[in-house]
Length: 125
Image (cartoon, rainbow, N blue to C red; front, side, top):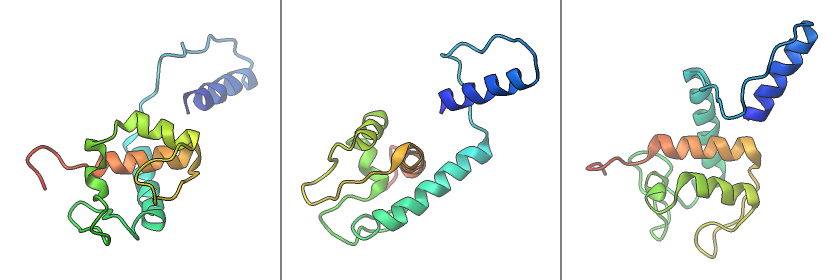
């Protein structure tokens, strides 16, 4: 995403005829709250379609299958960045009969944003 933003900034500056230095690659622009909300909502839509048959996808519901954890608890067992990398690389994640998903970069970011947003906090659940 940073590469895309940097590329758009550079393209815009070039189009304006201004010569300015690009920001260093390690600087990131924090997403706005509306971007975060859109990413989370997109993630919710994906998990409703892909995960709700087996997993609880909300903050209080029970999983339809008793042998599957609610999604609000999965990050207790998985590092969010490692899980995102596994999804991006197409590595099988989860139990043996869980399907593999090809979510793409935006879909992966959306699902992870949603998962982070619903995780149980200490003392909850």
